[in-house]
Each structure stands twice: as C-alpha cells, then as structure tokens.
Length: 501
Image (tube, rainbow, N blue to C red; front, side):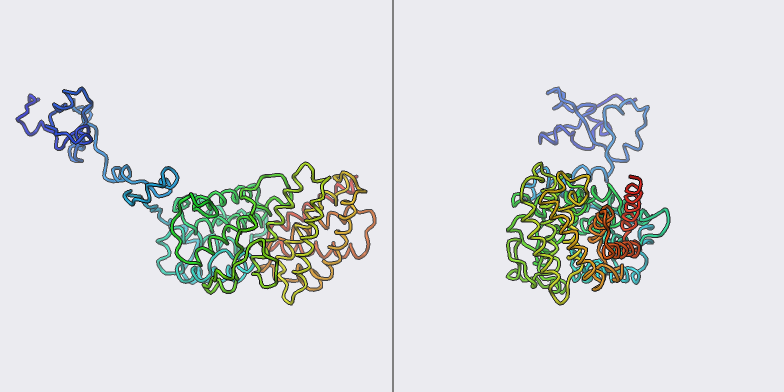
C-alpha cells in the first residue's frame, strides 16, 4: 500500500469532512483524519462519490473510516419533510416558505385501475352516485367533481382514483350469499385507502366517509364505528372544524368552504347514528354548537353557487326553506342529545326527555306536512324518537312500567304505528320506493317497532298488518342495504326467545 502523503492527491478526500462543513471551517481533506478534526479530537467523516463506494470492498482497510455514501434518493429523503409532518410538529415554519417539503407520490396499481374500468364506466358510476346516494347525503360538490376530477388524466391522482373507487363501492349492490358485503372491491378500497391517506386531501376524507357509510349500511361492525372515528381524526388533521390556532391549507372559494362544512356534518351524522342501538360509547366528534353554520341550499350548491347571506345556524328556526341536508343535520344533532341523555345516570329520573320528545315531534310534523316530504329525513327522525323510548318499550328493561315515561312510550308506539300505516305504507314513504334511492336511516326504528309489538300481550289486527309490512320492507331493502337482512335475523331471534319464555 502506498504510504500516506499530504502531497498525493490520491490520499485526499474529494470534499471537506462533515465536521468542517457544518462548522464552516477550512478543511485540508487529509486522510484518514483532517488536521482540524485531529487538533480538536473530533470524529472526522467524509462522504464519498458513488464510484468510490462501488470500488471499495469489505477487505479495504480504510472502509471503516469512510462511511458509504447515501444514494441520491436517500439524500433527497433526508433533506425533505412532508407537509403533514411539519404541520403537526412545527407549523410556524410553514409561514416562512423556506422548508423543502416532499409530496406524496403513490402510484396507482394496475389492478385498481382495472377495478375502476374505462372512462365511460367511471362516468356511469358517478352518475349513479349523484342520482341516488347524493340525494340524501350531499357532501361532495357535484360541479367541482365533474369539472375537475372526471378528466382522462385521472389516474395520475391517487386521491381522485380512491374517491372514484369509493363511489363504485357505495353504488354497488352487495351480492347474495355467504360472502355478503365484504367483497373483493370492499377490501381493495380499504387497502388502497391506507396507501393514499398520506396525500392529505379532502378527497381521501370523502372516500373514507363513503366507506364508513357502506359499512354502516351493510352492518359491518366494528369496522363502521372505527372508520367513522378515523374520518373525524382525518378531518381534524385537515383543519376542518378546528380552532383558528391550527394552520390549514388555504381555501379560496365559498364552494370549497361549503364542501368542507358538509363533509364535517356527514361525519357528525354518521357518528351519532352508528351508536343509535347502543348509547354510551363516546362520540368521535364534538357536539355541534348553536352558532355552527348549517349547509347551504342543496340545489344552488350543486350548481356551484353558495351565498353567505343565505346561510343559517343551528339556532335558526326550522323552516321549509332550509335545505334537506340542513334539516337532516338538525335531526342528527337531536339524535346526539337523545343518546347523551340515555347514557346519563339520571336518564330515568330527569325530565329532559320531555323536551326532546316535543322537539322531535315538532320536527316530524313539519317534515310530514309539506307538499314534497323528505322521506329520508322523516325516517331519521322516527329512529331518533324511537331511540328516546327504546328502554321503555322493552318491558324487562324499564325501571318502572307504570311511570309517566313508560306510559308515554306506549302512546308514542301507537302513534308511530298509525303514522307508519298512513304515511310510510300508503304514501310509500318507507315501502314501495326504489331500494336504490333509499337511505338506511329508517331500518332502526322499523326494527324496534316490530320488536315492541312482538312483546305486547294483545296484538291488534292493525299492528299485525304494520309488522307484516315492515318485515316485507326489510326483505325489499336488503337488496340495497345488507343491514336490513341482519335486522330480520335479529327479529327471528327475538321471536324465538319470546316463544321460549
């Protein structure tokens, strides 16, 4: 081996050592240690060009002194930080614009594109979504969607592809048989969601809401409950419905602001409804405040028009001029209050239930007494009202079957039974509709009404007819929402237990 010499260029490092570079000191590049590091007794390390690293072998005696260089991709990863990480660790840095942030570059696998189909199939799926699902859960801007995301180059945006795939999932009827709604498409969407969630995009959040809605409507638990919680966290991460101290990406149009508001309300509604049968689990979203803004007019928003002067808050009186979705949001807030009340220790003794009863009854009357009733909102209110009295509709769970609340529960049972016959059957509010147009909101109250009548000692012919109609409704809706079939099985189990007793 050649004796080290300061005069030999072969024994000089190609660039200054890391210690001298960071301290901005002059480095003589001597090997194995520069004079500056030797004088100060510091560790001296050099980065070598890639050609040197390839020529150096494990038997090279100098190998341990000179770390192998990082490849170009690794160096880039070290020097860049993704936007969400900075947003959580030190968002103030973003104000200066000096940080080099990396962008998510997830590629879209070929099998995902195959599941979507060609552009014609994608347009067909989008059309079905906006014709059926969007009518009762409008949280995706129709105009923005068609203007921006249905372009031939959609496959370059993983978050757009994820949303398109989630739309296909929610509009696809579950297959019959043992496989049920846990289809290959369902699992593909969930896996791709995990890959794309780092895109930090509202499209990812909207896709997550559709997945949660799919799970809720098809009785996939606990996945539905967990997915809704994940959506709430993702919305918070995006800065939706958080305090002003949390920095977010700039929103430039009223339509974008409205879209963020609507997706938050959709999460709030699902967060309450997923626990309607089991009060007590904490919500993932905070209770809406009276000064929170409700969604704007649905038809205008679909056209890309949002006028701030037309917005109303939760404290505004309910009117027929409010959008359908705004009224559903109000019903969702009331359902949250019902579930809070049922989970409290004083639910049996206090009189909060009276105020909740009056409010729900007023909302129900207002919803029914218009020319074009919103059947999905009506069935949601029915479910909230039945949830308020469920413990008193089941005799062995009631604290006192002779209490005022138990008597009121029986009155409400008969009242809803009469209304079911007059409105939901004869006017085809619940039965007789195209299953593809229906929401899953009414299935809970129908199940509880059937169960309550099943336990009564004296069954009137009128009640028996309503029960038969509701059971037939379950069989019809099961084609669209698998949870209807689950409720039928639960009714059979109740019947077997009741007969066994």
